[in-house]
Image 1 (cartoon, rainbow, N blue to C red):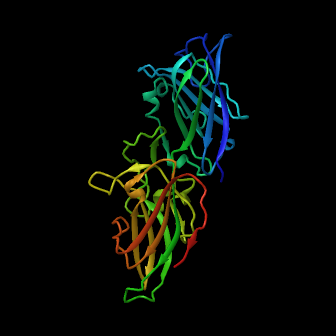
Image 2: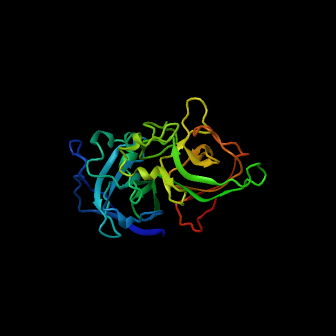
Image 3: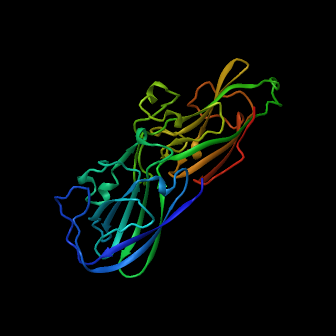
Length: 323
């Protein structure tokens, strides 16, 4: 999975009709014959999907004057590397969203940038091969200037790259970890499309334990589990639950397996309690003793050695699963 890049040409016009308040979010009612300038935006897309995987992009241009009023809205097809985005001249905030279906946005929610920030996405609507992505950039709609933006997915990826056991210091040094599985618990089912970090998880999947019945409405329930711990990526929405104190909900990676006939759990706070959108959390794990009997009680350091990498969605290699 390579990083893809396209150049978006943003065409700004100085003489246009105001955005009609009666207009629904299908396309703007802009008309003009006076060209102000063309501003180039290099748009990057990292991870499992390239920009070419998306049919269209929703483009919102807001006044950057303290009001955050909507200047223009357009849903533009991605037929090639160039988009023509119209707006009045001046300082603007541009929001680009890829992966939203037709009818996803309600007219009343997009009139102000603050309102757009309240729009949420459901985990049940996510496809990890084509996740919803967004970018927010400040642009000067006027002569000259080049801008770049990165379309960041809301989803975060969690992968167990390697799993080993080392019981050499235990009475059961010859024991084997059997029926090993990995899955995520305490996963928020809703996330704002413009993640600001202050959103409390809602509609939790796998609350406190694996709940297959509760995940039935997910078109891709496999995004929350890796049966056999084979290095298959799992996905979740961001959260900042810390270490799981009172009133918080911390997304956890759970390794489950049996040792000498007893089922043990090794819950780990993903990202040490902070999961950011568009990041990969890659784990190398060594189980050193029997774990907990509760999948929602974090494993002690004496139970499992944890090595974690938190990186943007880039390609990685050398998965190794040994136990």
